[in-house]
Length: 51
Image 1: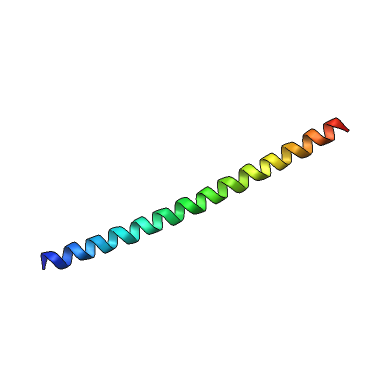
Image 2: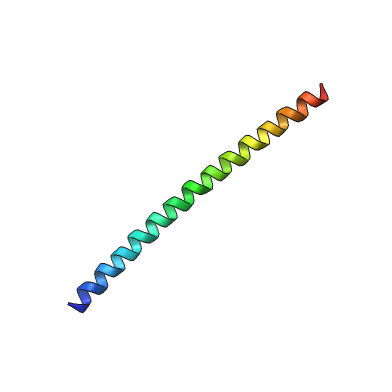
């Protein structure tokens, strides 16, 4: 009985960890996209300033 509970808890912990890493990856890509768009925007502004 105790062994079954431990296995269930272990599986639950792995699932939780997996979901957390997925969310972190999503956030990471979102941050990268945001940084990229900001960089492109700054490049456009600086290029128009030169003209």
